[in-house]
Amino acid sequence: MASKGLEILIAMMLGFFTGILLSGNGMHVQESGIQILLGCIFWLLAFSYLKRRP
Image (cartoon, rainbow, N blue to C red; front, side, top):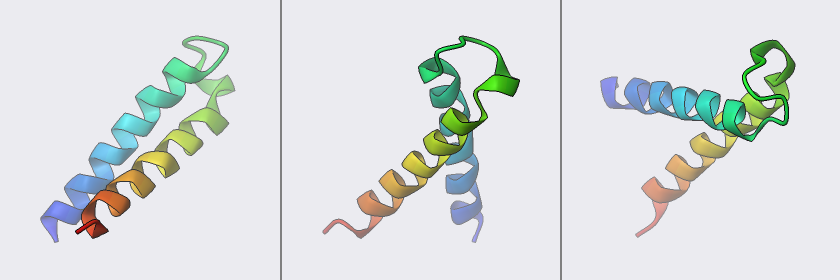
């Protein structure tokens, strides 16, 4: 259970920083919400894909 929570926390942190880096506005957090959300979704999907891969 703790590993799943840690995985979600890491995905959220990576998604946040990925969204900030890929946003066109630089460091304006209030204007890059969509990029942050898409970054979090991307990392959650990437982790779930890597876990299910044989």
